[in-house]
Length: 247
Ligand code: ADP
Image 1 (tube, protein in one colour):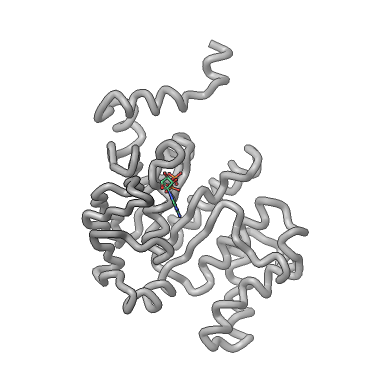
Image 2: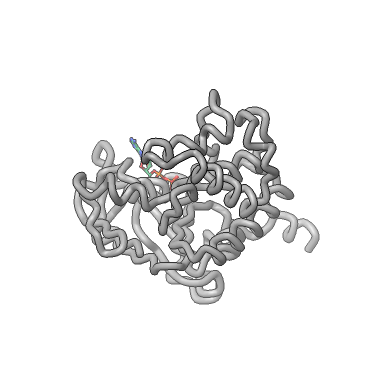
Protein backbone atom coordinates (compact mmCIF):
# COMPACT_ATOMS: atom_id res chain seq x y z
CA UNK A 1 0.00 0.00 0.00
CA UNK A 2 1.17 3.53 -0.77
CA UNK A 3 -0.17 6.41 1.31
CA UNK A 4 0.43 10.10 0.73
CA UNK A 5 -0.59 12.29 3.64
CA UNK A 6 -0.76 16.02 2.98
CA UNK A 7 2.31 15.97 0.72
CA UNK A 8 3.49 19.32 -0.65
CA UNK A 9 6.48 20.29 -2.78
CA UNK A 10 7.36 23.61 -4.33
CA UNK A 11 10.01 24.72 -6.80
CA UNK A 12 10.95 28.40 -6.81
CA UNK A 13 7.73 29.34 -4.99
CA UNK A 14 5.62 27.36 -7.45
CA UNK A 15 3.62 24.55 -5.85
CA UNK A 16 4.23 21.30 -7.80
CA UNK A 17 2.29 19.31 -5.17
CA UNK A 18 -0.32 21.03 -3.05
CA UNK A 19 -1.37 19.04 0.05
CA UNK A 20 -1.82 15.70 -1.71
CA UNK A 21 -3.52 12.91 0.24
CA UNK A 22 -4.02 9.66 -1.61
CA UNK A 23 -4.00 5.93 -0.87
CA UNK A 24 -3.11 3.19 -3.37
CA UNK A 25 -4.40 -0.09 -1.92
CA UNK A 26 -2.21 -3.19 -2.13
CA UNK A 27 -2.63 -5.22 -5.29
CA UNK A 28 -4.49 -2.45 -7.16
CA UNK A 29 -3.55 -0.13 -10.00
CA UNK A 30 -3.99 3.62 -9.69
CA UNK A 31 -3.35 5.85 -12.68
CA UNK A 32 -2.30 9.49 -12.36
CA UNK A 33 -3.47 11.64 -15.23
CA UNK A 34 -3.54 15.36 -16.01
CA UNK A 35 -2.05 18.01 -18.24
CA UNK A 36 1.68 18.36 -18.58
CA UNK A 37 3.20 20.06 -15.53
CA UNK A 38 0.35 19.20 -13.13
CA UNK A 39 2.68 17.26 -10.78
CA UNK A 40 2.24 13.59 -11.80
CA UNK A 41 5.95 12.75 -12.11
CA UNK A 42 6.81 14.73 -8.99
CA UNK A 43 4.31 12.66 -6.99
CA UNK A 44 5.74 9.41 -8.38
CA UNK A 45 9.33 10.50 -7.81
CA UNK A 46 8.51 11.39 -4.21
CA UNK A 47 7.89 7.66 -3.62
CA UNK A 48 11.34 6.77 -4.97
CA UNK A 49 13.09 9.37 -2.83
CA UNK A 50 14.23 11.26 -5.95
CA UNK A 51 12.00 14.13 -4.80
CA UNK A 52 12.02 15.19 -1.18
CA UNK A 53 8.65 16.73 -0.18
CA UNK A 54 8.69 20.02 1.77
CA UNK A 55 5.96 18.72 4.07
CA UNK A 56 3.64 15.77 4.55
CA UNK A 57 4.35 12.06 4.87
CA UNK A 58 4.56 9.04 2.59
CA UNK A 59 4.03 5.50 3.89
CA UNK A 60 4.88 2.30 2.02
CA UNK A 61 3.16 -0.70 3.59
CA UNK A 62 2.74 1.30 6.81
CA UNK A 63 6.46 2.23 7.01
CA UNK A 64 7.13 5.97 6.84
CA UNK A 65 9.54 7.03 4.12
CA UNK A 66 12.50 8.88 5.68
CA UNK A 67 16.19 9.12 4.83
CA UNK A 68 16.73 6.23 7.27
CA UNK A 69 14.05 3.90 5.84
CA UNK A 70 14.60 4.84 2.16
CA UNK A 71 17.42 2.38 1.31
CA UNK A 72 15.43 -0.59 2.63
CA UNK A 73 12.13 0.61 1.10
CA UNK A 74 13.77 1.41 -2.24
CA UNK A 75 14.50 -2.28 -2.81
CA UNK A 76 10.75 -2.95 -2.55
CA UNK A 77 9.99 -0.54 -5.40
CA UNK A 78 10.31 -1.14 -9.15
CA UNK A 79 10.50 2.02 -11.26
CA UNK A 80 10.04 2.28 -15.04
CA UNK A 81 10.42 5.55 -16.95
CA UNK A 82 9.40 6.55 -20.49
CA UNK A 83 12.75 6.02 -22.20
CA UNK A 84 13.49 2.94 -20.14
CA UNK A 85 16.56 4.35 -18.42
CA UNK A 86 18.77 1.38 -19.34
CA UNK A 87 22.54 1.91 -19.37
CA UNK A 88 23.44 2.15 -23.09
CA UNK A 89 26.93 0.66 -22.71
CA UNK A 90 25.61 -2.54 -21.08
CA UNK A 91 23.72 -5.41 -22.70
CA UNK A 92 20.19 -6.09 -21.50
CA UNK A 93 21.51 -8.95 -19.39
CA UNK A 94 24.19 -6.80 -17.77
CA UNK A 95 21.61 -4.09 -17.04
CA UNK A 96 19.47 -6.69 -15.30
CA UNK A 97 22.37 -8.10 -13.29
CA UNK A 98 23.38 -4.78 -11.70
CA UNK A 99 21.08 -4.67 -8.67
CA UNK A 100 21.10 -8.38 -7.79
CA UNK A 101 24.92 -8.42 -8.00
CA UNK A 102 25.07 -5.45 -5.63
CA UNK A 103 22.91 -7.44 -3.24
CA UNK A 104 25.22 -10.45 -3.51
CA UNK A 105 22.98 -12.87 -5.43
CA UNK A 106 24.89 -15.76 -7.02
CA UNK A 107 24.98 -16.03 -10.84
CA UNK A 108 22.74 -19.07 -10.92
CA UNK A 109 19.95 -17.28 -9.04
CA UNK A 110 20.36 -14.22 -11.29
CA UNK A 111 20.20 -16.37 -14.44
CA UNK A 112 17.08 -18.15 -13.22
CA UNK A 113 15.36 -14.89 -12.41
CA UNK A 114 16.25 -13.46 -15.85
CA UNK A 115 14.84 -16.56 -17.58
CA UNK A 116 11.64 -16.33 -15.54
CA UNK A 117 11.15 -12.64 -16.33
CA UNK A 118 12.01 -13.00 -20.03
CA UNK A 119 9.21 -15.54 -20.24
CA UNK A 120 6.83 -13.30 -18.27
CA UNK A 121 7.53 -10.30 -20.51
CA UNK A 122 7.51 -12.44 -23.70
CA UNK A 123 11.10 -11.60 -24.67
CA UNK A 124 13.20 -14.20 -26.51
CA UNK A 125 16.17 -15.04 -24.30
CA UNK A 126 18.63 -14.14 -27.13
CA UNK A 127 17.62 -10.49 -26.78
CA UNK A 128 19.37 -10.48 -23.39
CA UNK A 129 22.71 -10.27 -25.26
CA UNK A 130 21.68 -7.10 -27.13
CA UNK A 131 22.57 -3.54 -26.23
CA UNK A 132 19.62 -1.17 -25.69
CA UNK A 133 20.26 0.56 -29.05
CA UNK A 134 19.91 -2.81 -30.81
CA UNK A 135 16.43 -3.38 -29.35
CA UNK A 136 13.12 -1.97 -30.61
CA UNK A 137 11.33 0.57 -28.40
CA UNK A 138 8.86 -2.08 -27.23
CA UNK A 139 11.64 -4.55 -26.42
CA UNK A 140 13.52 -1.88 -24.48
CA UNK A 141 10.48 -1.22 -22.34
CA UNK A 142 10.06 -4.95 -21.75
CA UNK A 143 13.68 -5.09 -20.53
CA UNK A 144 13.04 -2.03 -18.34
CA UNK A 145 10.05 -3.81 -16.85
CA UNK A 146 12.20 -6.91 -16.25
CA UNK A 147 14.75 -4.73 -14.48
CA UNK A 148 12.03 -3.17 -12.32
CA UNK A 149 10.77 -6.66 -11.41
CA UNK A 150 14.18 -8.29 -10.76
CA UNK A 151 13.96 -8.02 -6.97
CA UNK A 152 10.25 -8.92 -6.98
CA UNK A 153 9.15 -5.58 -5.49
CA UNK A 154 5.66 -5.19 -4.02
CA UNK A 155 5.32 -1.75 -5.54
CA UNK A 156 5.67 -0.79 -9.20
CA UNK A 157 5.93 2.83 -10.32
CA UNK A 158 5.66 3.54 -14.05
CA UNK A 159 6.09 7.03 -15.50
CA UNK A 160 4.60 7.15 -19.02
CA UNK A 161 6.09 3.71 -19.72
CA UNK A 162 4.47 3.47 -23.18
CA UNK A 163 4.65 7.15 -24.12
CA UNK A 164 7.40 6.75 -26.73
CA UNK A 165 5.90 3.75 -28.58
CA UNK A 166 3.94 3.62 -31.81
CA UNK A 167 0.23 2.74 -31.50
CA UNK A 168 0.37 -0.96 -32.43
CA UNK A 169 3.35 -1.79 -30.21
CA UNK A 170 1.81 0.33 -27.50
CA UNK A 171 -1.45 -1.63 -27.65
CA UNK A 172 0.40 -4.97 -27.44
CA UNK A 173 2.44 -3.86 -24.47
CA UNK A 174 -0.65 -2.43 -22.74
CA UNK A 175 -2.33 -5.84 -22.91
CA UNK A 176 0.78 -7.63 -21.63
CA UNK A 177 1.40 -5.12 -18.86
CA UNK A 178 -2.15 -5.31 -17.55
CA UNK A 179 -1.95 -9.10 -17.53
CA UNK A 180 1.37 -8.94 -15.62
CA UNK A 181 -0.02 -6.49 -13.03
CA UNK A 182 -2.99 -8.77 -12.46
CA UNK A 183 -1.03 -11.99 -12.35
CA UNK A 184 1.64 -10.68 -9.96
CA UNK A 185 -0.85 -8.68 -7.81
CA UNK A 186 1.51 -5.72 -7.56
CA UNK A 187 0.60 -2.35 -6.09
CA UNK A 188 0.90 -0.14 -9.15
CA UNK A 189 1.05 3.63 -9.56
CA UNK A 190 1.23 4.59 -13.24
CA UNK A 191 1.45 7.98 -14.94
CA UNK A 192 -0.05 8.65 -18.35
CA UNK A 193 -1.57 11.59 -20.17
CA UNK A 194 -3.87 9.33 -22.19
CA UNK A 195 -7.35 8.89 -20.71
CA UNK A 196 -8.03 5.72 -22.74
CA UNK A 197 -4.86 4.16 -21.34
CA UNK A 198 -5.83 5.30 -17.83
CA UNK A 199 -9.20 3.59 -18.20
CA UNK A 200 -7.56 0.46 -19.59
CA UNK A 201 -5.16 0.03 -16.63
CA UNK A 202 -6.70 1.79 -13.70
CA UNK A 203 -8.77 0.27 -10.93
CA UNK A 204 -8.83 3.94 -10.09
CA UNK A 205 -7.99 7.08 -12.04
CA UNK A 206 -6.74 10.20 -10.27
CA UNK A 207 -7.02 13.42 -12.24
CA UNK A 208 -4.58 16.16 -11.20
CA UNK A 209 -4.46 19.89 -11.95
CA UNK A 210 -1.84 22.40 -10.76
CA UNK A 211 -0.52 20.08 -8.05
CA UNK A 212 -3.92 19.18 -6.62
CA UNK A 213 -6.21 16.16 -6.98
CA UNK A 214 -9.36 17.12 -8.85
CA UNK A 215 -11.19 13.79 -8.94
CA UNK A 216 -10.59 10.12 -8.12
CA UNK A 217 -12.74 7.34 -9.52
CA UNK A 218 -13.38 5.04 -12.46
CA UNK A 219 -13.35 6.22 -16.06
CA UNK A 220 -17.15 6.28 -16.04
CA UNK A 221 -17.12 8.39 -12.84
CA UNK A 222 -14.98 10.96 -14.64
CA UNK A 223 -17.07 10.86 -17.81
CA UNK A 224 -20.55 10.61 -16.28
CA UNK A 225 -20.11 12.22 -12.88
CA UNK A 226 -17.44 14.91 -13.34
CA UNK A 227 -16.48 16.72 -10.12
CA UNK A 228 -16.27 20.07 -11.91
CA UNK A 229 -16.07 21.79 -15.29
CA UNK A 230 -12.32 21.07 -15.61
CA UNK A 231 -12.97 17.31 -15.56
CA UNK A 232 -15.47 17.63 -18.42
CA UNK A 233 -13.08 19.86 -20.34
CA UNK A 234 -10.25 17.34 -19.84
CA UNK A 235 -12.42 14.39 -20.91
CA UNK A 236 -13.73 16.21 -24.00
CA UNK A 237 -10.23 17.26 -25.03
CA UNK A 238 -9.23 13.58 -25.02
CA UNK A 239 -12.03 12.36 -27.24
CA UNK A 240 -10.48 10.84 -30.32
CA UNK A 241 -9.97 13.29 -33.21
CA UNK A 242 -10.92 10.34 -35.48
CA UNK A 243 -14.29 10.13 -33.73
CA UNK A 244 -14.87 13.78 -34.59
CA UNK A 245 -13.73 13.41 -38.20
CA UNK A 246 -15.94 10.47 -39.12
CA UNK A 247 -19.01 11.71 -37.29
P1 ADP B 1 3.94 16.30 -14.93
O1 ADP B 1 4.62 15.01 -14.62
O2 ADP B 1 2.49 16.29 -14.56
O3 ADP B 1 4.14 16.76 -16.35
P2 ADP B 1 5.90 17.41 -13.14
O4 ADP B 1 5.65 16.68 -11.88
O5 ADP B 1 7.05 16.99 -13.97
O6 ADP B 1 4.58 17.44 -14.01
O7 ADP B 1 6.11 18.96 -12.79
C1 ADP B 1 5.23 19.70 -11.95
C2 ADP B 1 5.73 21.13 -11.85
O8 ADP B 1 6.96 21.17 -11.12
C3 ADP B 1 6.02 21.77 -13.19
O9 ADP B 1 5.66 23.13 -13.11
C4 ADP B 1 7.50 21.60 -13.35
O10 ADP B 1 8.05 22.62 -14.16
C5 ADP B 1 7.99 21.73 -11.91
N1 ADP B 1 9.22 20.96 -11.65
C6 ADP B 1 9.32 19.61 -11.63
N2 ADP B 1 10.57 19.23 -11.34
C7 ADP B 1 11.29 20.37 -11.19
C8 ADP B 1 12.66 20.65 -10.86
N3 ADP B 1 13.53 19.68 -10.63
N4 ADP B 1 13.03 21.94 -10.76
C9 ADP B 1 12.13 22.95 -10.96
N5 ADP B 1 10.84 22.76 -11.26
C10 ADP B 1 10.41 21.49 -11.37
